[in-house]
Image 1 (cartoon, rainbow, N blue to C red):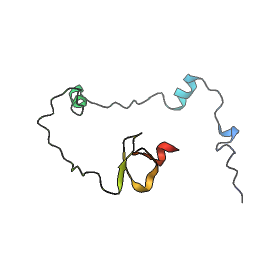
Image 2: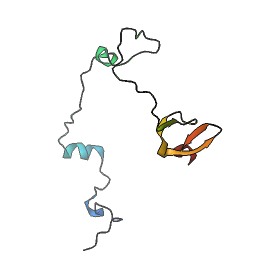
Image 3: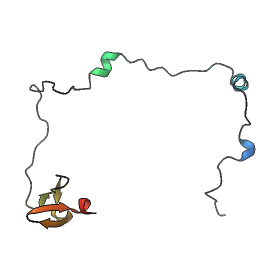
Image 4: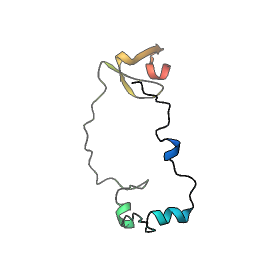
Length: 101
């Protein structure tokens, strides 16, 4: 059996007719629950670093690897790319295929 993907998922007769707010509240018992998240302001500020903050006590956790022989730096986006992504080279400046498209 073929499926019509353009057909609405809910039939018109299943959709509620314009009900008043009072009727909807009466149908659901009138007791609405609201989700409340208990978060203190001090908890929110812990994960953020302000511009100009002193980071001298922080230690670098990644290893920096110099550019390899089979890589180049695109002169448009300044990302290090593999040679297979080289689109063109003009006066020593290399450009990646993403910047050239």
